[in-house]
Image 1 (cartoon, rainbow, N blue to C red):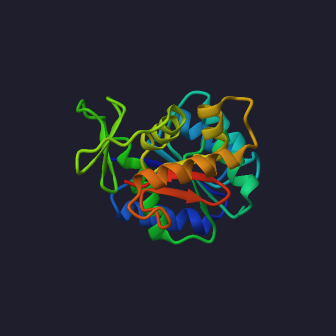
Image 2: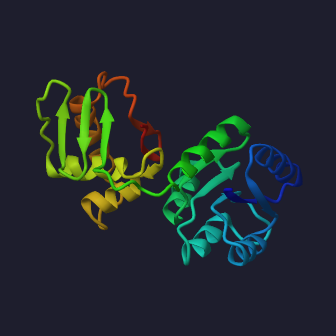
Length: 226
């Protein structure tokens, strides 16, 4: 049974999420402060954390950093802070996804399912993924159309695509992509991301203007939707 730690200082939200998550078969523990969350996580490590940023004792990003010091547990931020700077800060601190309050329970549950699917052990089979009419083989680093024609990608296009494909369903922040693909000195060159994402969509998506798999999260980053 997947164990979820829910951290929020609003009692009604804690109660609602505890009821809804338990009704769907999750094991739920709650905490109403950052210190209580870190203590609970250390005492009985969860499989997933749902975390508010506006806590009474610690900022949520500090809680994320505290967790990331010893665990890679998935973290979904649930916050009333809607600004892109807050979202980027949380993602850069180590969060895996970000949901803005007010939120729909169905959306949060869908995000939780997407994250928990990634907790399943990887299969030993060669990783091959589909984007439109293309099969992407990460082991062989090839892209092949259904008609057998190989799609050529540049090394930079490959690096950006592979980062997204190895995190299916997960939001990858702009800063993380720039750091991992271009290097740590690249922080603000978001125009690179837009240009290369447009190139990838033209090569891989059936309708580049209406992508189904390579998704932009405005102001935040990009996501591969299987």
